[in-house]
Length: 329
Image 1: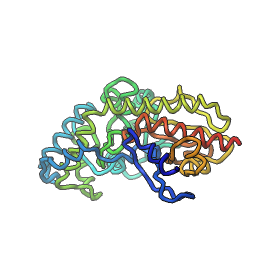
Image 2 (image 1 turned 90 degrees about the vertical axis):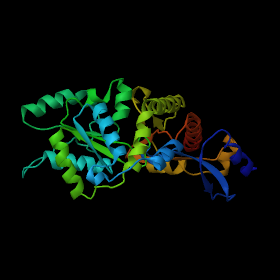
Image 3 (image 1 turned 30 degrees about the vertical axis):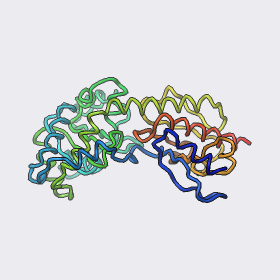
Image 4 (image 1 turned 45 degrees about the vertical axis):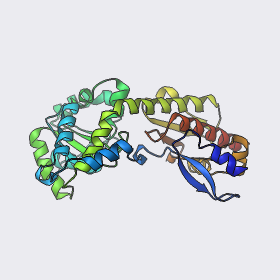
């Protein structure tokens, strides 16, 4: 019976599945992975583009697909040039190396900053303050496209007060890896040397740039879906009116939902959400595992991406409802 119910949950879902080793070992559980938008995998169009990419040696600046990507993103971001690098972490590090050339240079970050500017609207004020004191502003654009879509403005408008910017392809855009650093021509020429020193000089990297180009092509459509599903989940969780969890849908602007947890620890809640029990299958007709990370001592973070559909979002809500009712009892 449990096997039949679990398999019934597959209908219409492009699911990720895992074996559940409960009292009836071997039952398939549907996995909704909300840990991060970094868990996306290349979809068929990306894989085709990667297989057919025209490539050259990018370490010599001879890869035509990388050049195409760099030119398109320079226009998108409103900067003179960009440079393709393996990761957004490297892009940020290169920016720090490029701006902090003098001995004793300092980097000013927010108290909980992941080298990321959370409030895009405050950039103009930061820019004026930086100019007053001769400082430079770097924008960690790990999720810059999410911000641009949510704000209904071109990315270049967000970047215009910054001296440099990083731009990630492996999160909401769904590419397997890759990022860019953008800025003035002389800054990017120096960034090329830093990339080489950090081991980021690549050769036939057009294979990777091709996936990034596909991610850019449908970014707005996909990110709007992600934002809508995140909002759908936030409203659904609020409507459960559980004393254990609280979320304000008005604070959900992009693909992230922060849920305040009162009672059990966020770690315990996450463990319960990824565990399947016979009671769950009997009551809901589904075997679902929702993967999440504790975010703070009193909150968890859920992140939507192109691997989580509206159907997945509804299944995740049903899982939350089941777990919360169990905890309330």
